[in-house]
Amino acid sequence: MRIAVGSDHAGYEDPPPWYKPAIMEHLKSRGHEVIDCGTNGPESVDYPDFAGKVCQSILSGEAERGVLMCGTGIGVGIAANRYKGIRAATCATPDMARLSREHNNANVICLGRRILSLDKCIQLIDIWLDTPFSGGERHTRRVEKMG
View 1 (cartoon, one colour):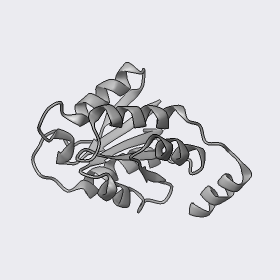
View 2: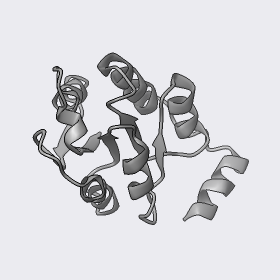
View 3: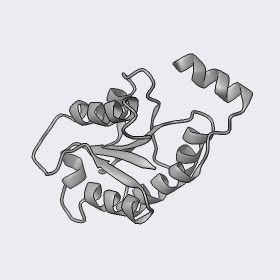
């Protein structure tokens, strides 16, 4: 699977390990192709710019799914959901990650560097990637209403 990954400076906050590069390496170790949508350092940047790059990568067909990160996951989630065809879910628990796929067919997961450990982020990403959309009539109907 091709996965676009983006973060603001929170993905490179100390203390190490820096989350964004570690997540990208984890995705590669699982056999995924990773598209780096930036940022690539701890200098302050604006999260909507990187959310936009991940979303455009998905909407253009370059990527199938996206992983976004900021301090809480909230900002990138709000920014990503401005794009028609993007269903971004900010997740903090395994159930949120699983249900965002089963019920909402989320194509972007948003994570918070300042509220989740790196191990928890990787756990949530793995659950999210491994969970298919249920395809149930009620869930399909609801997802179609979002466009």
